Image (cartoon, rainbow, N blue to C red):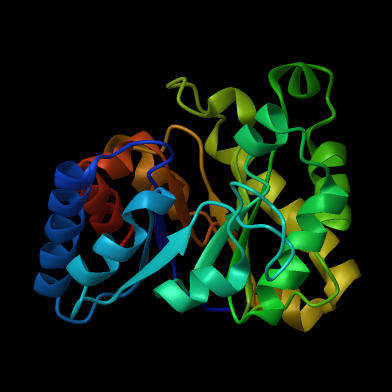
Length: 253
C-alpha cells in the first residue's frame, strides 16, 4: 500500500534564536523550490523556538512539531507544556517516547500512552518512538522489546491518520553505527504485524513507520527504499539544511 514518506527533523536541545531561524528559513526555501514534493516534511525544534520557527516556515509545506508534551491540558506542572498549548502555537505533531526521554526521564510505556491519548484529543499527530538498546540487540531481544513498546505505548485511539511510529535503535542514535538494511526491514515488518494485531490490518497497512538512528545522505536511499520504511526521523543531520534536504531527495522526495 502506498504511504507518503515523512521526512522529520528532531532538533533535540539545539538552536538559539539566530541559528534556529536560519535553519528553518533554509529548509522552507528548499522545500518551496521542490514545487510539489513527493513526501511530507516535519521539523521539531526545542520549545523555545516553536513560535519563531512557525513564522519562518510560512508558505512552505513543512509541518511543525514539538519534542514532548504533558498528558494534562493545564494545571500545576511546572516546566511542562500541554498538548493544547502546542496546538495553540501552531504545532500539528509531537514526538513521544524518544529513547532519550525514556532513559533521561524514566518515561514508561504507560506514561507515553497517556500522553498520546491526550495529544490525539488535542488534535495533534503523534510520532511514537520505539527501539532497543545494544544489550537487548546482542541478546536477540530486538523484536520482543519493540513489540512490547508498541503494545504499551500506542493507545487504542491511534490511527494511520494521527499516529506515526519511529523505530530508532538506541545504540545507533548519534553513534554513526547503523543496522543493516535487512535488519531494519525485518523490524519494520514485525512492527507492522504487531500494529495489525493491536489496531487492525487496515490501520497497520496505512500507518507510517519511520527509521531513525544515524540517518545521513549517504545511507538514506538504502534505508528509505525498503518496503516497510516510510520516511526518517533525523537527528544530527537535520541541523544542516543541505544534509536534511539531501536525505529527502535521496529518498525520492
